[in-house]
Image (tube, helix red, strand yellow):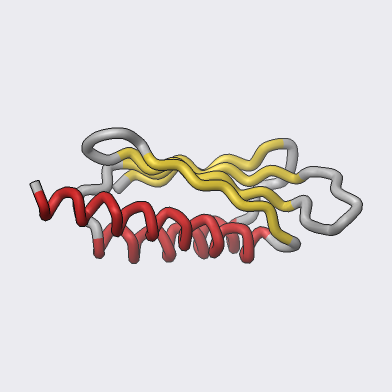
Length: 99
């Protein structure tokens, strides 16, 4: 699986790159039909402290799946987004096995 990570209007982070790649590799091992992951991190000015946004889009056979989350830290946002994607992947895998 190819992983493309973008940082929008903020500096890049090697630690976040490694964290996201490690988490997405686990998904790729579990769901070998994943083709590509597009990841973007954005920083939003938010008075409530939850201005760190993580968006992920996975390319796979059939329609792409997308998830986004807004949390206090980028690590929490990435974890939440990957969790949402895994739920969607489980549903997609159930459809694969029934057809």
